[in-house]
Image 1 (tube, one colour):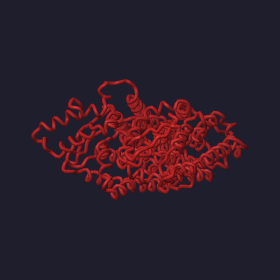
Image 2 (tube, helix red, strand yellow; image 1 turned 60 degrees about the vertical axis):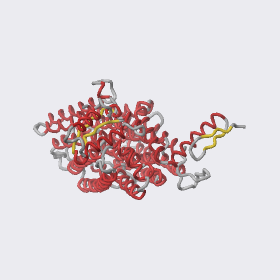
Image 3 (cartoon, one colour; image 1 turned 30 degrees about the vertical axis):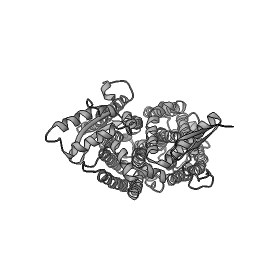
Image 4 (cartoon, helix red, strand yellow; image 1 turned 120 degrees about the vertical axis):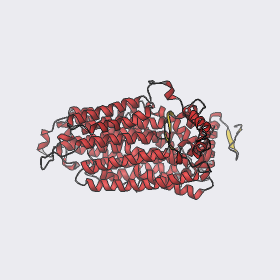
Length: 611
């Protein structure tokens, strides 16, 4: 029940807030709710609780497991023994126990399985692997830390009217907790219908958090965010319906993610047109969230208008929903289509990296610079996904984690100076390092982590993506050429390196304009350095920027096995990709032995003695 408690604890505290009026009590209750939720999420990695909760999905499908016991009860009951739901569950259990899905099923832990809508084979099915665990921990950590940026919002005054700037803060904190619950649910769901429900739950609180407590153009930004996300959700819903109908072979369709990972690739091996349409539709749905060019235009507006804590959450975790969805569903359900479109995904990733960095370089609004930097950094996800090598996939997921820490810290840095100066114009700043030296030091960590300085967290993930993408053979010419071969992922990896230079340029130039040079307004001399709540927000983020830069294995040990499962799924269902992997392995063996390896059409390496 750990996952259920983690999901619904924020909702319980949100309900309590309905009966509390005093804003101080509201803040303390919200802090308690986020802290308890964070502590519960730590149970996913710490050896606490009942050992039975850690049994794998494969074990739970046995006769003495939760799901196996449920199936036996249904089969022995005269009323349900021959029902469509029982037959569908029996099919799903058989797949989850199969050799083909054994790796995936053994990865999933903390399983909770209860029939929800039996007539449509919908279950309350929760389980997590290393990928989901990292995203849940990132969510609960950020929701706790970002609360520091929201702590004094009720005391903020409008710069012109000197009236309270933010009203109805109790509703703000209620929606904040609802948002956290929805995010955790997204990463915990192993039933695709349940995933879709939580996906939609996230949309509404975010819309109101931007539209009610945002800046002057908040309504425009909120509606734009809502329309883009809703359009993507519609495409996702259409794909959801198709998946259900495509898997209905007289036993009812299924929304079980593990079962779909086995059934859909086989279905789309013959229904190729439907597979391509479903992949593109699902890709667009997730690309809006990432965001991927050209579906990115809602992001700068939403970031600029959103209050600081919401900008931090938007950059830190909401964007990761898109990357998580691409890996878990697009690549899991449609591996052949993902391989066929790898070149286009790599091109879009290169555009994101270079275009986002170039746009950031041309901005004068401090917050808009950070917003476009998110567009650029999320391009590394696509590049890693397109490469499909183990190292690139690891790097892409690590980039999700690292960006989820450095980007919120950057938005916190922007919010701190905005609260004092009441503007974000980079050309009007200067000399802040003298007036606010502690703030300048913390900002330096954020800037360099986002830039990708070796020793900080941003470096290792980008390095892994580039290293893995440059060693892929996806899209190469038949003779092995890749330079100026526009289908080659390796070629677009080289193009993406331009983004490294542009990223360094806008970070260093931005830091220089804010913290060095002449102070351009005498009122800046009245600014106080960091307050207690600002320290509480920045220190945890800075700590993990350094820790993950020095010890990236802390995160990689959780994502390594899920990425291996995804790659093995690609090998099983994509013959072309399987051959590339086999040839790469054979080449490594040849180099190790000093001989040559010939690969036959059945992907069986034949060793030829070297000279």
